[in-house]
Amino acid sequence: MLKLDFNSDLGENFGLYKLGDDTAVLSQISSANVACGFHAGDPQTIAATVRNAVANGVSVGAHPGFQDLQGFGRRAIQMSHGEIYNLTVYQVGAVKAFAEAAGSRLAHVKAHGALYNMAAKDLGMARALAEAVHDVDSSLVFFGLAGSELVRAGREAGLHVAEEVFADRSYQADGSLTPRGQPGAMITDVDTAISQVLRMVREGVVRSQQGVDVPVKADTLCIHGDQPGAATFARDIRAALIAEGIDIRPPQATYEYR
Image (tube, rainbow, N blue to C red; front, side, top):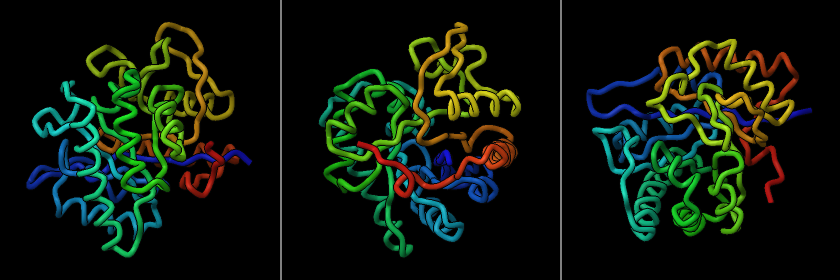
């Protein structure tokens, strides 16, 4: 039986600012990437999201990003590798503490937004992220874009690595995600998303915007919690996976990584 983790980026409220329907999405996924307070989130939101995840039997992960509330962590910021290491330790440590306070444990780490996309191509940045995760807790699963430098750096650091694919994003011929500012970057039709997901999981390829099939390894599948209609996307994608006989489980209980 094929096995797949299904994750979503959640806990992205901040103060009076509300984003997404986390409760509805949590009922469909197996892993939650919880915003750590830098690109979104605050202590109250982190605590509530972690408790909600635990109550739903969903694995808790940290989702560190650049310190950029105004840009939602999606603006490129130039930082030294030492600064990236420290901002990662700081954010992962925060969500780890909330997970333990809720009677659970932190299971994985996935970088957010520009930090994720930049590190997917920059091995030095990826190594700073992976080393930070390893030094906080070497048992944590490290999520990285399938086939990217994040995957390479995570394995170099001795971490368990889950290669990630996306249901609601289109791809470029080099295996990177289409930048959000470009046409067609977001997949808004659920049937198109399901077709892409099933090819990635069953065939190990994704069709790029350039019309080329790109090889991918699908250990964990992401749906963005901030996208309009995310709860419907999550429900329909989960139903399609189950109909195909694909077992949805958190990655630490599913794969041999190394």
